[in-house]
Image (cartoon, rainbow, N blue to C red; front, side, top):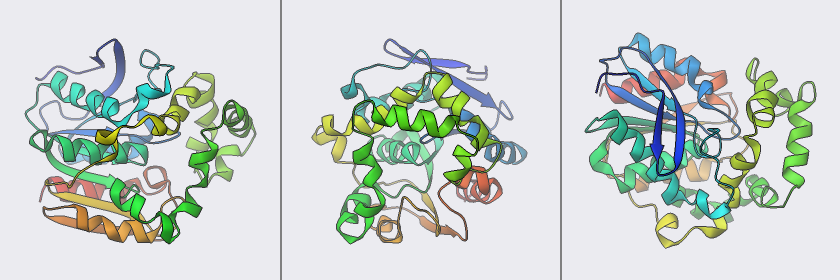
Length: 278
């Protein structure tokens, strides 16, 4: 398929997509995390375009205005995986190179494990393999992940995050660089995306066995982790290699926190280019 894709559907839900770069280039799907939108990939995507790659960055479930189911159970990992597969089907490609960050990284691991025939390569930033994440909980990860439980409270997270994102410097206090820090309120709160974004966390109690059992990955994989990440620690990062049965690289970006896409787009793009071209 050579036409640009501005949207795709999965059942009743329609997702917006930023499709850019050489139209005939190898397609790379970019999955964002929380609290971000597809636009967070701009700095990375422009560098991928310079290397001949076409990028497709969707606003994911809960973020796209026409794909915001209110029920928590509609944010099970299986539903999110099906959204990504629907994009690949709409593209008409046999395989794609898949990239994810944060929650988008968790989805990317799940897609690659469950649909290896559709994924040529996998690059994940920040988020370790979910099984490694769980195994690391008693070894310090639980202290970094306290906010996941807090986000399951009713109403309070919306109130707190709306206030934080609206306040001058709120995004900067989270470590986000400009202009992303100043865009948080308009992108997430004013756009109506915050409840759906939080439902990625609130849907976890509704995950079934298939959602929780994200298996081993058998496609060439690069995992990019930053040694200043406040949310995701070294233990899970180092365990991740044991869940990949394929060529694998663990790449560390030093002296930067969780917000790799915003702060170090060139290094993230280089990791993707190296994996896709390997």
